[in-house]
Amino acid sequence: MTIEPIAHIRTPFKEKFGIPRQGALAAGCPGTVVFEPGYRLQDAVRGLEQFSHIWLIWGFSAAPWDGNFTVRPPRLGGNRRIGVFASRSPFRPNSLGMSAVRLVCVDLTAEGGPLLHVSGADLLDGTPIYDIKPYIPYADCLADATDGYTAPTKSHLLRVEFAAGALDAIKSGEGIDADTLSQIERLLALDPRVSYDTDPDKVWGMSYGRYNVRFKVCDDTAVVLQISMPE
Image (cartoon, rainbow, N blue to C red; front, side, top):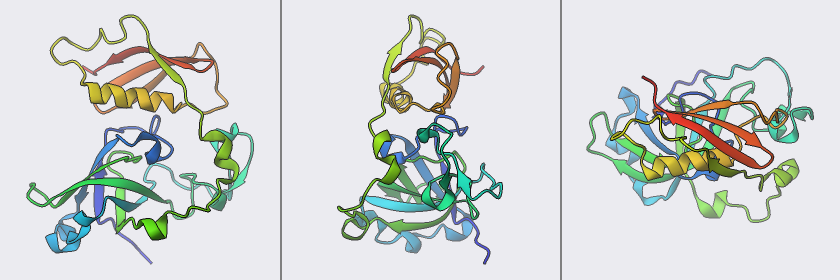
């Protein structure tokens, strides 16, 4: 069977590093689902506005499968192997992902619409969307579900601090809005590093929207060294 994208999503994430491992952990991450021309039909989304959340079925477009049936989840230190079907690794035989996101609104009047504005998007900018389904709480939220090996990793959050002059590189007048700054802080708190690389002197770089973020991590604190915009 061959499947083709029905849409692509626009997000602030221009590279894989820094994307939250689960969208619910960074609920403010915005995204816009832009349908392909053949699917830009109001009839296709009729009734969708009644739901608060939707499922996006999408493709790991930047993570081709290497043929391995075991993976090393970063949150387990990068050394423990888990079966690919017991993980959410992007390196999968059919490279399919799924994300539950909040549906902010269905824009029926925008150029190129309808557009779906969402939050909690953990997808690379331009990711292909293969299907969209409403999130139905009584069927999709299972109260007796267990966490498996992921349970110990849920509460791993860093404290975030800003070094003196960290924002000086942003030109006066262009600034950075409070919501974007708050979202960058949240992404850093989630610790985007691979867990086995804990060199406190290493300077990490992350992009978010039009901003470049440079930071270090020492113990449980991420120190923002600089937020800038490319020339």
